[in-house]
Amino acid sequence: MSRFLQRSGLLAIVIACLGAPAQAQYNYPGGYGGFGWGGWGGGGTVAGNAAHGMGIYAAGAGAYNQQTAVAQSINADTAMQLNSYIHDSTYRNAASELQRRKNQQKLVTESLEATYTRLRDNPEASDIRSGEALNIILNELTNPKVYTQVVQKSNVPVNSQLVKNIQFQYAANMIAISLADLSERGVPDELATNPAFAENRTQIRDLFGKLRRETDSSGNASIETLRNCRVAIKALQEKVRVVLPVSNVNRAPADNFLKALFGLTKMMETPSVEQFLKGLDKYPSTTLGHLITFMNSFNLRFGRPSSPVQEAAYAQLYPMLASVRDQAQAKGPNPISEPVAAPDPKQLTGFFSAMDYSHFDPQPDPHTNKIPAPPAANAPK
Image 1 (spheres, rainbow, N blue to C red):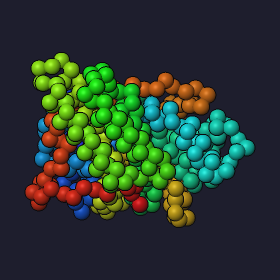
Image 2: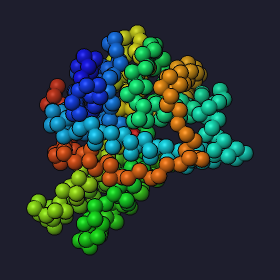
Image 3: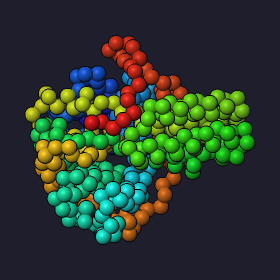
Image 4: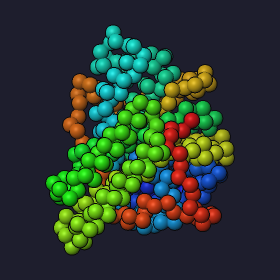
């Protein structure tokens, strides 16, 4: 693992891709809890692949004192599966997201295909100011097929204040879509067919449907719905423990499914991004690669600006992102005219499978030895 990662303590699960073993490394950030995320300084960029959204998982779960166990449970293949599934799901849902935005803005004169083509290839100033054009590039740059080389090519310096002027938005809807998809198409055969689990299946599917509707309408997941989801998952876990003994061949697939549900609900929790941006106070500038890695690791998107300063930040960042995309030849096809097949939600189960159930419980902060309160389940402001 690079010296940069050892220095910065990147709050993510990072896969060493350049000559290192195919094993994840999970580092606790010395500054979490008020001193910021330390991954902004240093002379290089991240030489590896960060598992999508796992900064959010780590902070939300509070799994600080179990980092070694968590790291040992994850390898490069399962991390790549998680990244691929979420990227493909984002790409596949581009059409519905564009339709939703067009309905909000009452833009009905242009086809979805033409809208996407404009946003990707020739965005108007308003497309850049809104963040929509930047999000399309961000999705292309975080494609697992090109992500590592993208980060390596992103050494261009970025003023730290420019990063602070970004209106970061947590993409809770993609995690909610993943949960709903997993509960519908990724259920192990025994849980899907055994009548003993029928009531639990229905309850979980209904709750995840509610979670998805909440994030679709407001971008946020309510604390109450998240808690109800975890109660329902716990009830199914207890049912599995009783009905399927450890020696049963169906027990492991059931446990892996449940761990994925627990892990994804943890990823729905959103810690304050401002805590991690405080690390920028130590550096006058960072790099575009650090910014891309941060947003990928924390499942962040470019939100709609609320001030001219933020709009100006997007105008500065867009050509920088576009240049990296061109250098890495990362421009993707139009998902409206060239849709991809629905990704297999069972890709999600492998990532969490080797973790112990205790990893999904709140853990003591190593600085205070106290269990932190659950983060608010809303998008960062």
